[in-house]
Image: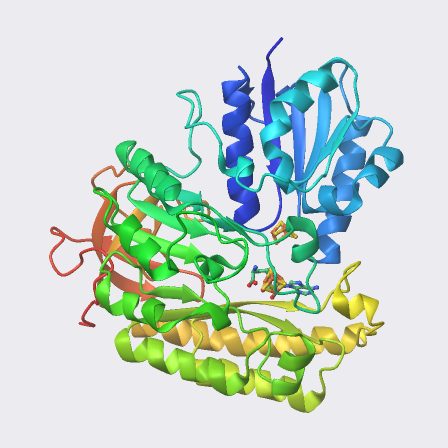
Length: 461
Ligand code: SAH
Ligand code: SF4
Ligand code: F3S
């Protein structure tokens, strides 16, 4: 009784990749992807609970979806809100068929089968067998990758750090790594199917391989894992996300000089520029330590593009603390950043300590000031790259600029280009950057790949 499925995903790259895993599992179970929810027999809402806004979005979408639920259609909620809310979701939405957390993805085909027999299901247990979640089937021939030429590869899951504001350790559970042999095997299979760029994924991805209880057989230092992945024939670009500053060791810093496939972009969340706020957030490093790390990275890789995550109006943030965040943004020279207003989340250390959120107006004002500064800095960064030769991995047609293609350079910036020659998604195209906006670079293709290879340092022309 197979049919068609549709998955609507919110949240981070781990969620994006989990959605791919779900789609592949459903393909193996005989299902095929539908273009939208209306055409699907199985609809999944794949949720994020990192900020309150994301959670609210779920409730409105789910309500509308269940209202319009056709006979025979089954609807499930997956992801971090599913893990956090569990049974409460089933009670609140009587027409909802099943709810499952991020560690229960392997059970999806069984849950769908049960739901189609009118059995409501809840699967939010944390796995006892921590490795079972990594044992997923290879890509089914009918599974089509949403990102030709590029792929995510899970290397670890969960988080043991418990930053005061963050819900992730509760929704994703404890830190669990995957054996390196399995990771490299997956990368080989991907390269065999035309993938040239892999992004290694984990909530604290560079905690991979650190000495700790529960280290799995076959774990190796993170820098060594990067090297082995980069050595797989066909792999031209390696990225990873999200690293935590305290796990950036000397070997990882050196990788930026030694591994040409390692892209010259690092997204290194800092959250705040004030030592007092960093301590209250339980980030485990100081502003000076972060800047020192940035200095060491830039010493080995002068063209490194650095981006970050920032939170404004954490409950203990004073006007002075906020000024220090602005100062840090300048000093670290972030090319871009994701910035958020503090959002109180259930069960987090900050919420349990009764830390009251700041005035929403003040939070908004700080966010706007920070984003204004970042916009200027991002534009200056982009303008400095005009004239540069680089290599773009084509992603497809530009959604905003008709007639243009969109891709990314090794520094992970969006590059739009006009090409007389048709280029397929997944193809690498040498270009020269001609102009810049805060959001993208505009480039023209050039004839050959010399001086624009892989992630190698690029001379500014
Ligand atoms: N695992 C990653 C990202 C976690 S969530 C890491 O450790 O870096 C992504 C980003 O959301 C965080 O870096 C943080 O900036 C933001 N974030 C997390 N919880 C938040 C909250 N309660 N309020 C506002 N922003 C939050
Ligand atoms: Fe959340 Fe901190 Fe863990 Fe990142 S390191 S997932 S911000 S608790
Ligand atoms: Fe959101 Fe869960 Fe990712 S809370 S940011 S989907 S880990």
